[in-house]
Image 1: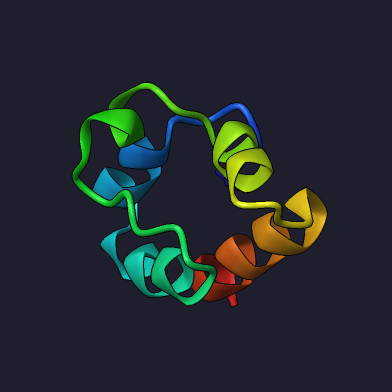
Image 2: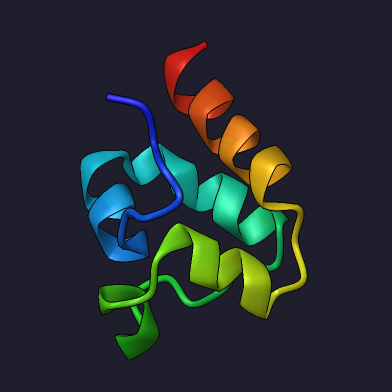
Length: 65
């Protein structure tokens, strides 16, 4: 199942721990913090001024390619 913008960051990390490298590479360092328990990928991208589509593509490429 592809990673989508409405998925919770921690749920993605729990399902695909290898994505930590992508999150860190984008400067999303909230791995394991309280925000990651309720913040979606879309909210995290917005908070860090990231291009959502590019971020999602990289997360999915890392997991599924």
